[in-house]
Amino acid sequence: MDEINHEVSPCEVLPDDYAICIAGHGSRDKEGIQEFLTLSAKFKEREPQRIVECGFLEFAKPTIDDAIVKCVQDGIKNIVVIPGVLMAAGHAKNDMPSEVLSIARRFPDLNIQYGRPLDIHPKVLRVCSDRIESAEKSSSSEIQRSDTLLMTVGRGSSDPDSNSNIVKVSRMLWEGMGFGWSETSFIGVTQPLLPEALDRVIKMGFKRIIVFPYFLFTGILAKRIYSITDDFQQKYPDTEFLKAPYLNYDDLIVDVFMERAREIPFGLQNMNCQMCKYREQVVGFEDQVGEPQAGHHHHVRGIEGHHGLDHGHDHHHTHDHSDHDK
Image 1 (cartoon, one colour):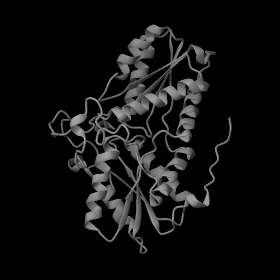
Image 2 (image 1 turned 120 degrees about the horizontal axis):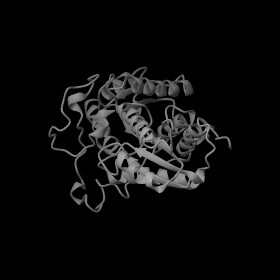
Image 3 (image 1 turned 90 degrees about the horizontal axis):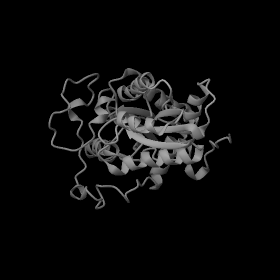
Image 4 (image 1 turned 90 degrees about the vertical axis):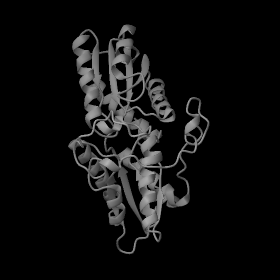
């Protein structure tokens, strides 16, 4: 496999007077929180002289607000905030920007700029490929990729643009790696959900099914995906089910996050707005164009562990509830 170039051109260097704040979603799973903190530490390893902080939207401390405040040291006035998530859905488009806007209003002398998530990137796809290949190597069975179905599992969102990007990732891995077939499913919010998707594809007769969670870190949802996969292995012993690892804090993932940080001061951090339901008249979501940027996580900001609320309760909004199970 070809080596990936980690070098940074001079025009892509983040100015010295900028601090980096990495905004994570947060999780009730302590392993997931620790993995995110390790990612933040890897930023610091890359640029030990730079101020790097991280904060969470919900379920963990420090909060995003706390992290931005901690960036203001040694006279730093410029702060880039990177959403530490894979895709631009409700959290990256609304909840996190709302947090940033709130603190920017409190500290008008600070230059706080918000970036974009990882999105689809060649280096991210390379990590996906590596994780899938590691699952293949874990098996002693000699099964060809032409006899293998790849099941890519996304978190699921109420944003169709984000969901469609998971499908695109799945398709690019299918064609790029030469699998016999590929399907996309989700663990919450939208369809098809993983169990119903597996029920359908098992009838296709593939000898092997690789289940790949398109997740950055572990958490309740990622572990649920593996548990469902184990259940199907017991139910269908004649088919080999392999569990591919999620992405985690791979060096290539850090590369892309650093790229996202470097592009912000130069105005290059535009998200894909072509199919964004908040900006365009997307079929079925026309009434959401121009919705105000507002956060929906005030009730769990900084609260560690289960907050005791029933997620069937009425918030009067449409943000993704699947991430509350992270």
